[in-house]
Amino acid sequence: MHRRTVWVGTLVLALVLALAATAAAESTVGKQQRLRTEVGTRHLDRAKWTHGSDSPGDGNHRRLHAFVGHDEDTSDTQYSYLSFYSRASLAIDEPADEVTNLSFEFRERNHVGAGAPRISVEVDNGDILYMAGFYCNHATTNPAWGRADFTGFTSDCIIWDNHGNQFAADGTSTAWQVYVSSHPGVQVNRAYVVLDEEGTYNLDKISLGAGRMYIGHFNRAKRCATEAAC
Image (cartoon, rainbow, N blue to C red; front, side, top):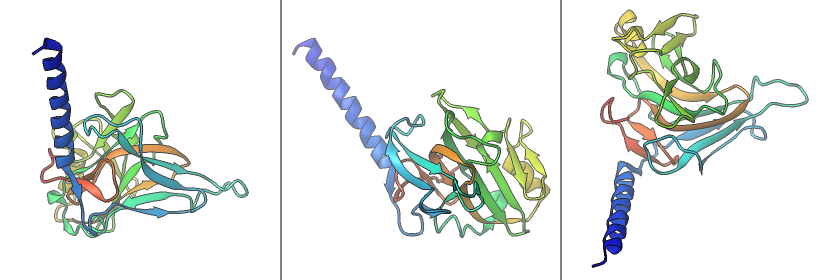
């Protein structure tokens, strides 16, 4: 057999195996785990999974593209926002020290503000924790994309609460672990993504501590069995 034919055949087989591995990692989810969207101002704010520049590692070239606008007549962005959640992420109801995979990736050239994109987490002691990509921005293998992993990174990562306190990764513990250690016994109730600053966003690998990571669809997700899995 001609050497070129062998090489091409090997390349095709590798591509097929890679695509199969990606497909196997992501599966259809039930109603509890479907990623849902809440729209602040329907004629201003929009979001969809689309093809294009993608965060590295998931192999599907899809990301969540979103736009948050404002009303030209009032310049009021108070009610202009997008939020993403699943029914499972609004009913986590687990001890905080058992919650993992609070993370997402974001395109650097789009809006990355002090408050959004972020994950907001509600805790049973009344705290609301703000996990903004701006305060936990780590490089990925694609310079166009950053990653914020509040339960995974042990450096250069900060969580803020609704009282203005900050909890910073200290080189050994993650920002999440620092918060949990200073609030023993607390339970996580809800977690959701919030985009409430005007601008265009591109997000990927969204994980809300409810056992799934969204990499290309609202109704399909990768299972997060461990912290390292997502």
